[in-house]
Length: 458
Ligand code: ADP
Ligand code: ASP
Ligand code: MG
Image 1 (tube, rainbow, N blue to C red):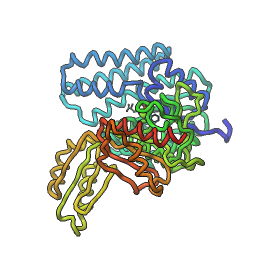
Image 2: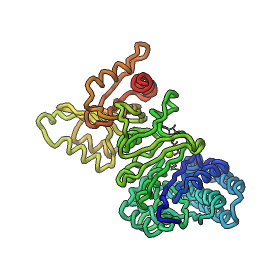
Image 3: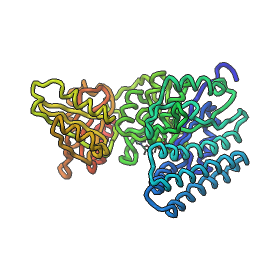
Image 4: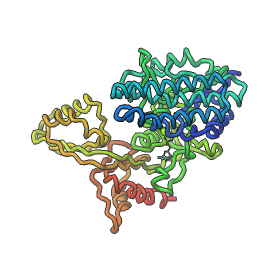
């Protein structure tokens, strides 16, 4: 391979790994594009099944686990057979399926599924799908293809369930283990989502984390391009499942796409963009079902900078209103409560304050964190509201556009069904305006705002 060899990291999500024909289609894309590293998700639905299996093993009898194990085993054996994999790969798959059963038995025996066991269980999804992709790809090209265990490079801390990557170490390990891909001597197929602690214990990066894995590997290798292949032809102006009028976006900046991901657009895992943004590696998002469709390019700059480029929805949020009569002229209150949120690793997304109170949104599941609430009770009174959604408008110059708030409220207004806006956040970001509404009114809020800001400005 010459010196001009482009280093491309290509990630294929679960729907692109659904069955033998989806895997073949994805392998074709990797081959035609000249991918250097192919990062795969588990086959479609498998991560959910593995989590369900662990829960069943913990709470139910062994007999009740067996049919689910059989489903997972049969699915992978069938794909291996359809792809006509080598005897060696078939053996490897069988060993992984044995590990799956052993783990489930262990959980069932102890009636306990600690996060460490959950991570090991979930890692099997990607560890099973990657040898299948490696086989499909090696049949299509002459360059050597190797199924690579990502745990050799994807170093994380030991926060099982959501391991935090060690960026520097990952870079070092990528440089020492994956150099053959960089110079074009070998194509590595590897697992998204999975990582390892320094002691060699298996971790995961959190649900949807394969996008993040691919971006970390792209950063680690200093890739020229990151490709995210999914089931829609790029990023749209909003989730097409909520609003069928959603339109494809040809180009978007890192900052806007990061806001979209953080504020709920499932198409990218929220932290995907930070590694590639650090190194200004362009990202392409496309559909493995329509590889020739234009897709979306994410870059540092975009020529066109619309006021509202896209909108996102994040469900299952809770609003906490924290009040202290002492806040009047009392500094230090915010510091105290933020220290508690930090201690409990709870992240706050939207916030507003008045003289004696502060309102913050958090993930709905935070309401189960009794310790946090006990500690908050010691410093303030806490009022909670649940079943809320964050609806965000993402674009440019949002905090410097006169009259935008009025346009938003007019757009939301409809006499037949009033949408009650519980809170707004405007001013902190050039790229984001967000409002909090009831979960059951959020999709309609998105449709009305999409109509106002996207469809009408066509
Ligand atoms: P994968 O399995 O490939 O990782 P995901 O299901 O995680 O795929 O992400 C793709 C899905 O993201 C799409 O099917 C779509 O429903 C959803 N989605 C949410 N917001 C958007 C958006 N703004 N543009 C496109 N798709 C979106
Ligand atoms: N398989 C994992 C999940 O379903 C990771 C991913 O696909 O991104 O969450
Ligand atoms: Mg995903």
